[in-house]
Length: 127
Image 1: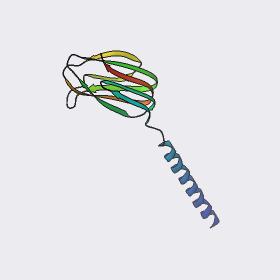
Image 2: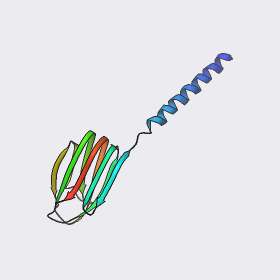
Image 3: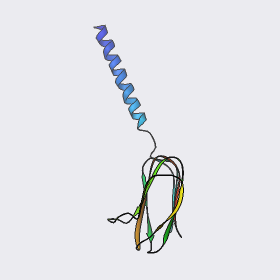
Image 4: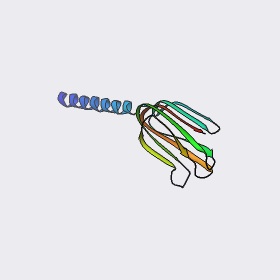
């Protein structure tokens, strides 16, 4: 009888320990940083990015959207496009870079920045 009680206690202790570990593993932050949008300038700086951050910019045909990525760690993906249309830019596993994207037509464009364990800055502005 005593052995059964000890086995039950051991089982309960192990189950609680595993549950505690499981809960703690889910406590990782998705986003720690700042988002600043002023007109057609958007800056996303982050010490932790483990999700997708989106912002909408109103752009005109012929404009150049300057992109400046500074990645200190992790991985970063980027997509720029209009709703229900093909993206005008899509990149995965990006590194620190500076480039421009031509705007083919006027409208609202969504900038989507996705990070996995990422730390750095993503800046977007119209030239």
